[in-house]
Length: 132
Image 1 (cartoon, one colour):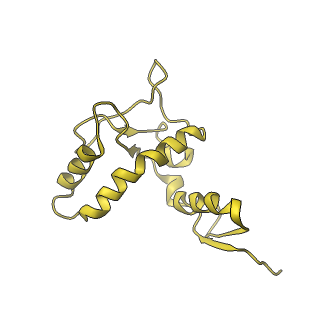
Image 2 (tube, helix red, strand yellow):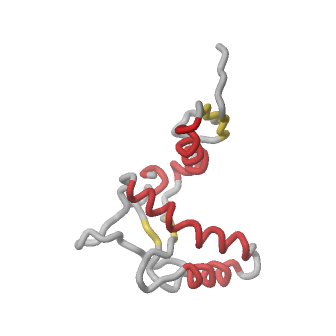
Image 3 (cartoon, one colour):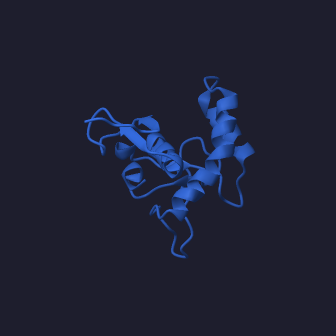
């Protein structure tokens, strides 16, 4: 068999699949994975996604909480990229139909966990990665 993709994406986790979705409109995409396509760390992730979406939150506060929790081990520039660029991608997941837990009024249910100073963790039951 001869394949002639325009792009090769290595990995079938959330990052690889998101890259493939972005590339698909401009060319043929081949996804290479080490096992079955559903076998990825993303699929086994039970924890939620921490993201500054609430009215009582901000990317600056999220970054400060993350850096404090990291106790000197965080790369501050990487943390800032994560917390500043994360919200639009999480909103994209919601727009695409990701079934995050919801409050009685239909709004996203945000939990407060670990070193987070406000409620900002989204879950999809206890299988957030599988849902994504």
